[in-house]
Image (cartoon, rainbow over all chains, first blue to last red):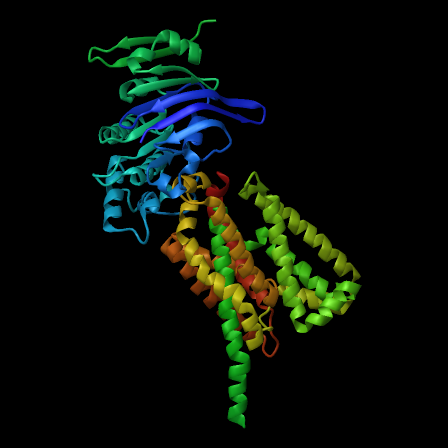
Length: 263
Length: 300
């Protein structure tokens, strides 16, 4: 199932959030959205997930437009990690992760759901946190628990078609090791066929993990391509208004160094 | 003859009263529990929707404003049913108003519901104040006693009248358990998990208003059962609504049964309004919750 976006416009009050987006995004690849604050990255994700309504243009998931999808069917095929969460009730981490199974359940959780939750916890490096109370976790641990919940929602039996993951700043509260760990886990899902669209602010992480980077600025796609093609000092300066140096490490990885623009 | 008298006390007085306490306690606790899920706040209560204030408006209308021409006709026609009918009507009307005000672009904004509830409560208090201003001493005392809450209206007849507003919702809330669990994650998250958030909100408000409105219509304002019972259950077995709701229903029934027994026994042969007892125990409990949860609620 691929995502096709045609001529997507969105405005709220006086401000134009998106000014004509056309994109086709294939499953089995990791697409990263980057851009300055207010560029429309979150708006695009929220429109794609159906959380936000009121746009012109067309959003198509597989064969159907977004509005034609029964919400529960869509929830079985794409999971969404919002920027921040506000859960204030003392669920255990395992219970939070099992909530991700809700769209797949008809009765109680089965042993299969428990197994999925366990795998999601391992992927989020929360092995051993299952019985901890969510509200007592640190910010980064909460973010990983929410990621595990989203992963538990997206994990499908081997023979079924893979799901989509929409991740809005999934590593904003994570230390470097856990940021790598989480994106490795995402990468693993991509290798198994999942489609991923993530908003990231760290261009080095984008360079390391993305198959495709889309630069958004002022509600438009500024530039779209392989990390190799689009991570250039000129594009970074034009989009972010910072000076950039892009170098290749001896191992062949792309490293981006940023500095303020000289006035 | 004596045996008949004892049987009559047991069957005609004690039995309906016990069942009344069970049903009302269960309904208040269930209404509190689902409201707390809806507002995602363990301190929420149906009175936030204006349920109690609306019911009190209905009550003063019957007790004090029954001199008004149209009102007197209706109150006269309804007879003893006038008080519950008016207070239940008031509770539903206030809730409906709050719900409508919070409605925006096809969905209900929960924060707006809270603010609308405050405004509707203030408006109701003005109406009640105006009525009390016109009342004589006896009417004020009668209204005041109603506000304090009591199960003295218990009878087989009132039990039958109360049942549809409490028993049916108590069954229906089972269907809200999983949706409310998911809603605790957040409205957007519940939507992403494939739930119709607007429908969850509508059912929650409707069922909470029916249960709390039904209870208040027959018993006046009995506070804190809806707060204490769900919270104690949450502390012992966690916030999963699939176990929280049945637990709160049982505990709420037990709490009100105990409170009503104490209300009848403590100052016998006089009877203390049961709302005084539940507030006396519940208010300090509420404060302890507030102090202990302050860091989480206010980020301090």
